[in-house]
Image (cartoon, rainbow, N blue to C red; front, side, top):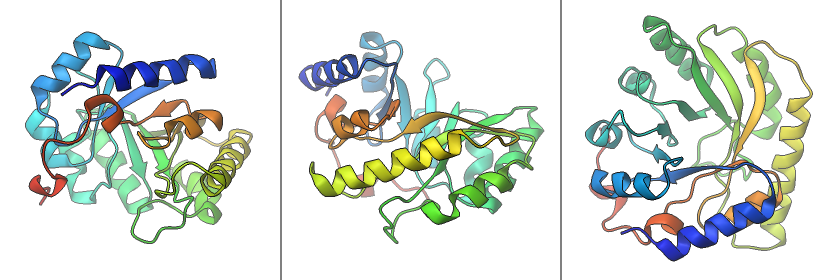
Amino acid sequence: MIDSRGIAELCRAIADCGRSVTIVAASKTRPIEELRALSEIMPEAVFGENRVQELLSKYDPALKWHFIGRLQTNKVKYIVDKVQLIHSLDRLPLAAEIDRQAAKTGKIQDCLVEVNVGGEPEKGGVSPEELSDMLDALGQFEHIRVRGLMTVMPNLGEGEALDALYQKLQRLYRHEMDVKRPNVAMEILSAGMSGDYKTALRYGSNMLRPGRAIFGERAYATSDISDK
């Protein structure tokens, strides 16, 4: 169910930040009919899926799709011709497979490098200390174009601890913007979901991934969707 009040608040926050921001609606567990209805209200909206199997079950080429979840190497072949942007590039073997599959279709696949700013072991992403080396290494892949960084922040709630992590992310992003590398252009900072998008906007995010703020609470548990 689309939350018109949540969408209005989201759009106000973006308008107040004074820059162009892309909304990637986190659409896991949401039926395709709901996504199509949202696209009527927000024609510029992009849909972000976390699971390959769910993306394939809902895929409609009339909509714009990003992949925002952890991506298994053996699943790359199923989505590389369907998504505009992969947000979760976090290891070289995955990059090699994306490059290989994109080459088959003559595509240059846009990707973001996921960085684990919060240092949470259960989450994907390269560490801040490994980021520069990772970006250097990605220059070898002719069919990958790195467009920026992505992160999933810890669930800390608004406050100083969250601000400190966003400050760290902003410093990383700005530092890497100044480094010239082949196949890398720091243009996108994908950070901020329903619980922290206002903080993300304060620290320079230009791509948000809200779900609940757009759709309300999920109709059923994410665990009901298998990606095996």
